Length: 152
Image 1: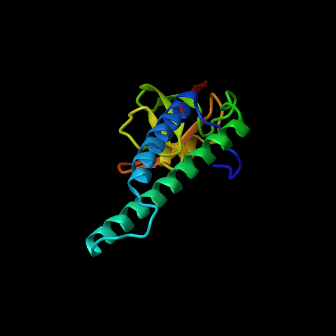
Image 2: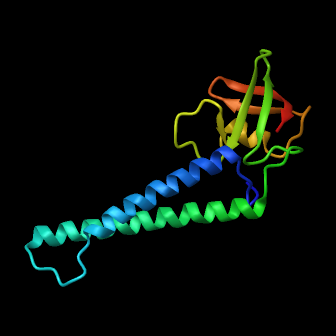
Image 3: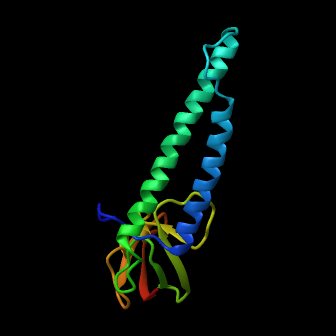
């Protein structure tokens, strides 16, 4: 990752917006359970109230993170079709001749066989390369190589 605004694929952007909508709905439900007046109840009620306040703070942090990532992606523009970067869709040919089209992403939150994270060995190796380049990366079985067939 470059440290600057990183592009994001349209699919990943849709997923972030969906997550954001779900988090906002969850936040609204939790916020509706918080009391505005002085608490009148036993310690269990107070503990429950504190837990909901903690949940609300956690949700607010995650909402802020996603909103920031969406803003950053809009500044960065679409992923490059010239050089592999975060958000790129890249087709690679492995040493055994098999080809696979992969999405280079930031975080793998769901089991997605086409997503390669930018901090994985293959993801790090692909960053900054162009179609025709061959990259080498480490696997549990030793070094492996792949050739960038195309981007976009």
